[in-house]
Length: 272
Image (cartoon, rainbow, N blue to C red; front, side, top):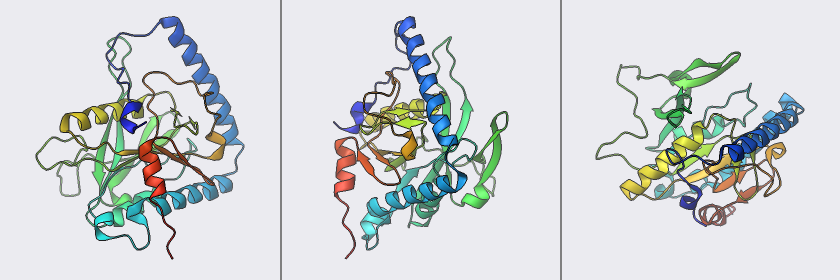
């Protein structure tokens, strides 16, 4: 099954049975609590070690980062990547951001959270991805909610120009190659449970729609997960708006979830 089949695009459609939705919300809430407790039991040192192993696994797998990669494989790649939040106990994606920024002619976009969903008019949550060129200089702290700060790109560059938005619409825009996504829990077949805001599901659905309009190849959706966040297949409560992954990297394994994920991983060859 290709990655495009993972998008139901349920935003704006008639709502499901309220009782079914309420039951799903309760199941998600219970699962998030369970996984959060498991993450809290991990030491900071263990999270750092496992996070480094996950990043190394991804960097060894994606063609653009491999030792001996050709110019065609390395140049002009487009990434949407998240900036990890220590308080949320997310997998550290900064080694991937830094490696992507070092690639020739690459473009790297990271998220800005704008607003929550509006249940009354079915408006989806709003999150934009803006281009950064220097992780140390382009990001500023913002309070996501009480006691939790995240790093987001400034709205303008050092010279005052608006930052490029990945959804900008001009004749020169090109599609993303990879979108790297955090999550609260995953399954080996690609199901993903977020933290409840719906920001990634809404953005991924909107970007998939944009790819269809532009007749672009959809990007590979990549999940980063600690082992403690991987649940048995079929046990994760997900609904029509929950977008699945093509491939998931953990410290010790790589789960290929779609034909796109399989192609990515099976193209890997150990350097001689």
